[in-house]
Every structure is written in C-alpha cells, then in structure tokens.
Image 1: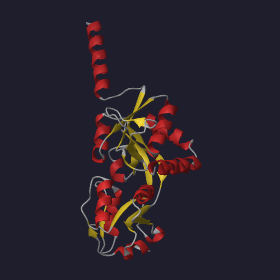
Image 2: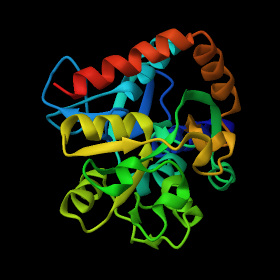
Image 3: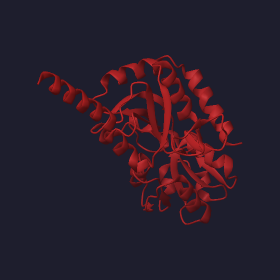
Image 4: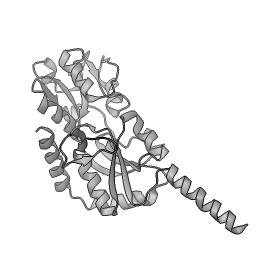
Amino acid sequence: MKKIFMVCFVTLAVFLIQACGVDENSLVVGMECDYAPFNWTTSDDTAEPVSGTNYYCDGYDMMIARQLAASLGRELVVRQVAWEGLIPALLSGEIDVIIAGMSPTPERAETVLFTDAYYVSAQVFVVQSGSTYAQAETLDDFAGARVIAQLGTLQDRLIPQIPDVVHRGALETYASLVTEVLSGASDALIAEWPVALSITQTNPSLTWVDLGEAGFILEASDVSVSIALRQADVALQVDINEILAAISLETRQSWMQDALERQGD
C-alpha cells in the first residue's frame, strides 16, 4: 500500500509540474516581440528563436533575458504572447517570467510579483513633425488634442491628465497607434521614450515631445519597467534582483543604444 501511495504521489507531482510548465533547467520568458526597442521580431538568426515559430526576437528585453538565463544557469526559451495575455500566461504557468517593458503598477502588483527596475525612462508624446503639438512645452498645449495609447497600459491611464483631451479608444499594437497619428485620426500617442525614439527613427514625418517636469504627474513605477513573476516565486525574485544589481547603468544604457541602432537597420 505504501508503495502504491508513493507511486501515485510521485506521478501526481510530475503531472502537476508538467501542467504548470515548471522546468528548473529552462527560463521561459514571455514578451510581445512587437514593442521595439524593447522587443521585436526579426529574420536575423543571430537573435533569439521564438518558440513554436520560424522567426526570432531581438531587443533590449532579449539582452536582459539572456543575461538572466546565463546567470541562473538555465536555457532561455522565448514565447511570443499578446500584451493582454502576458499576465494570464504567467499565472497559468505557460511562462516563467514577463520581460516586456512592463511598468510595476500597484494594480498589477496585486496579481504578480515584480523585481527591481531594469530600465527607467520618460513618458513622451509622438506627434506629426509639422503640427503645432511638436512645439508643445506643457500639458496645457495639448488641450483639446485627440490622444491615443496602447490598450491596458499606463500610457492610456495618463491621457485624462491632459486638459479637455479627446481620449481616443485604445488600440492593441503600436503599429496601429502609429497609423492613427500618421493618418491624422489622432494628434498624438503616448509612449516610453525609447519606444518613441524607435518610432520616429522609422517614421521621419513624426517626432517626439518630452515635457519634462511640465508633463504628467508620475509615480516612480510610472517611469520604470520591471520583470514580473508569480507571487510565490520569491526566491527567484531575489536571484534576479541580485543579477540586475550587477548590471551597471552604463551597461544598461549601452544595451538600449545597441537595440535602438539594430532596430533601425
């Protein structure tokens, strides 16, 4: 009877581990692969292969992911997940961590566990270069503007701070947001500075506007991006924080600059 019980217990344990996608030999990272310069798809096979596809993923997030996997002694596995599906994929065990330019907002922290920040940047506007908004210096200069942002993001929640703003319906991808501004359907989109720089590098008719202290009222979490884990993975959080602490500010800035240059190729 004891042997039968033990066999059943081991079988159940193996089943549960497999069902939850737990594998101590790999680090399964979820990201959009559509949020340059943090992450984007490419046919360049020097980048990281995306699990289950015939293409690759590159970007600043990939450089962070590679560093983590190497330091943890795990094989890196990248899975492409739509933005709205990232946290559900984490909680279901489909992925181990989210490295996707995600801000550690209090609302998200109720569901997932965040590491220390691995990048800090400003929130800026992307507008048409010839528009009056390109010369904006304060939020008041955007009064009455039609402004848009990505669905389910901090940027979309910042829009109501603009006086008399026309808050356009959020969209799922930055490609669609850029089309909105290029077509004139929206006057501006809000993005993190590296994303805005990437957009304007590939769309010369657009420019980015940083209002600095005359811009949005922001919390520290609003300008930070962190890695998300399941709330039970406290030990992994400690390990990752130690790895991140060993990556200097100069190295992080260099990695972001490299990502911006590669994405622009």
